[in-house]
Length: 304
Image (cartoon, rainbow, N blue to C red):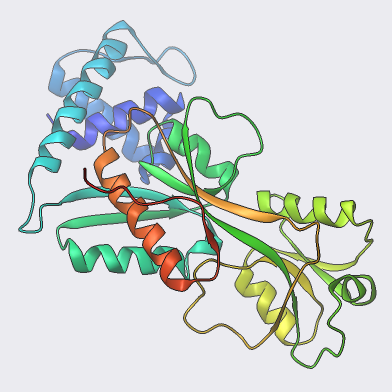
């Protein structure tokens, strides 16, 4: 029985539709439909009530989903038991914020690959609000997100680093008072949909600063480039691990009361890949310590 088809079956059960499952397993909706028909032929039973739109799992299908989860868990356990000479192997699927994709994440993956050649890491970038449900549904083993601003009792949260907010300004900017700059110069806003965007808004409101917004952008790279060309200033988190070639910009700390974007890891309590996630967390902490640009909020585990 195909492991791939079983994974797709579980995706259909969790998403509720073939279209939703297609997005989570990164194939077309037609491919999902074909896989499910092949699975029905393989087991010799109808798994879906296709009189309904969209098709829904019938009693047999629901029973197979339960068994499929057990089979996949055993399969994943088997993969984890196969180790290389360094004692760690398998596949880890991690979600990550776009702001971590040019510094923290590649540094951590590079460090782990050097130590564990048989460990394969897949990265899915998204905003925090998009990553949480993917972890909750088991599509991701874990994710690097900003600290949740609402209860997530169904998931485990482990803070890693605090990134203070700073003002980005062009090098030829004469003023160094962040509040004066924010009141006088055009403001390039960090995406409001990102949780750090809300944190920035909170700081501005607490200081009663009304900015003259000229654009709203999704990435630190885009914001930095606009600031570099003198098109405005911005408030951004000071990344705990910088990109390899940061632009020459003024990075001005905000005066108290300051806010910091807290980065951390979320995962399900029953995550089958927990040992690999914990190794990944240790490497994240190591890279933050090595960079020395942010407060480390967690310590790696040590053997007794």
